[in-house]
Length: 183
Ligand SMILES: Cc1cc2nc3c(=O)[nH]c(=O)nc-3n(C[C@H](O)[C@H](O)[C@H](O)COP(=O)(O)OP(=O)(O)OC[C@H]3O[C@@H](n4cnc5c(N)ncnc54)[C@H](O)[C@@H]3O)c2cc1C
Image (tube, rainbow, N blue to C red; front, side, top):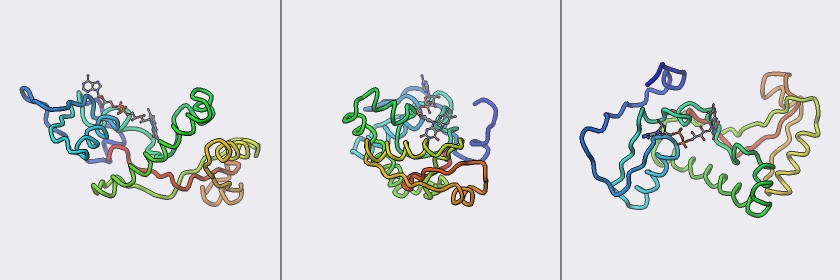
């Protein structure tokens, strides 16, 4: 492990021993990030008992243990980029999968009692620019193309909620949440 960081300093996660010798498994998952861990967990949930996760550093060492912790719908490509790349129908299906994933993550946190400081208060897409059209267009796009209702929060209301007058209103994704990624 390289130097300490905020996430490690505040997570208190266990350090698992290095693999000694050889191990046999029905499935070996390489990498203990979100993708590897959720694959392993999904296999266990489907009754596969012989699963080994091999992590070169420590669990959550990569981006999974040090990201923003925002759990929301969509991909880093952005909604417009997604629909441009996949087409409207397929893009909307792919987007829907991420909303399902959001519910799935929420259920797993509850089912396994994962103490990850989850805050289920939604997420705001704040507007940095003094131009209401940005939020209007995004809100319309989400509703028309993806059937998703993001609530418009006025400048005054958002200034109160964010304790800052820096922003020009926001869109509110109420189903999204935040957690400590490494926990
Ligand atoms: C700064 C930042 C902020 C982000 N914020 C968010 C956010 O708020 N919300 C969000 O949803 N996403 C966010 N992301 C994206 C998200 O963190 C990643 O999409 C996600 O963590 C990727 O998970 P992963 O399991 O695919 O990869 P990783 O987390 O990178 O996991 C891969 C693991 O495999 C291990 N590994 C690699 N090679 C081997 C090998 N040969 N043998 C054994 N182990 C190996 C690595 O050590 C690592 O632990 C953010 C990313 C960054 C960088």
